[in-house]
Figure 1 (tube, rainbow, N blue to C red):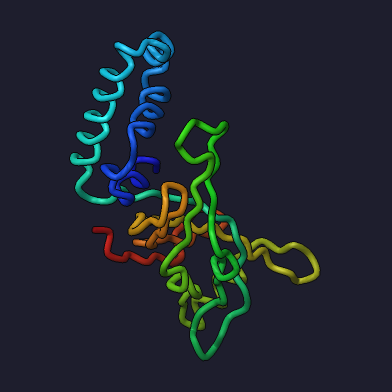
Figure 2 (tube, rainbow, N blue to C red):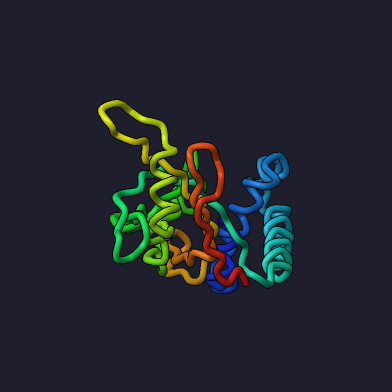
Length: 190
């Protein structure tokens, strides 16, 4: 995810501190050995910067990430022919935290979805919906288990900083309690 953030933020505008941080994370022994050596440190940082540029150039297309969200579906809407299902409606942003703060790299990356409204309902015709609901485990007193799993695929499309990204949902699946796909959206994964 960090490489995506660097790619979207046009890494070349950052100082050598990003390359030094990269070196500290991915070559910690070498970094510790030369961190106080003013002769070797610049050479190592320059090499780390070259490595980062090479990795970013190799990554021509945005990487697709996945996330799993456990949620519940609502009542069936007979007009829309779909169960109410909007698990992202009240989520303004998601956050991924590092276990510790690392120099200039962000301790957390916060991202929001530009198109979260596409996860809006679980379409089914009326007969299918009735059969599906009645097949769900009873929780007692006629209450049916409405838990489902949402598997989201997304890519990052823009950034305002290293720690603030905008993502676009490129596909998703809704799985029932037996992990069967009950609805799938295949967007443009390019």
